[in-house]
Length: 113
Image (spheres, rainbow, N blue to C red):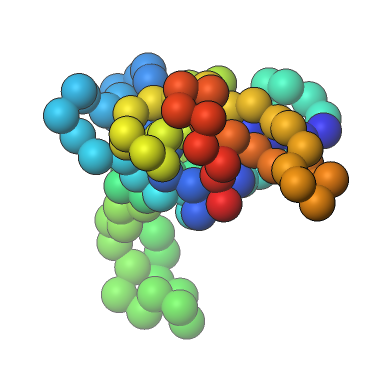
């Protein structure tokens, strides 16, 4: 199954506590969690859906304490930013000149990397 969102994309969060407002810039996708089950298709977005975790002291974190980190967001709540305008856009797939499949923003027709 192919997802419309990949690691490194700039996305807008459409719903939830950490959704983007109209004047905010898009955020970068840090990781995408792939799964056949539609309920388990999530992505980590930089600076969004921040949660606090209470951790015990360990070798990686000798101090312990409360750590803030990003939690996964369902991909249905994300929309890729159009590379031309910077606004949210739907994603389509088409064949390029070499015959390979590419993703493109439906608003402007611009190809995504």
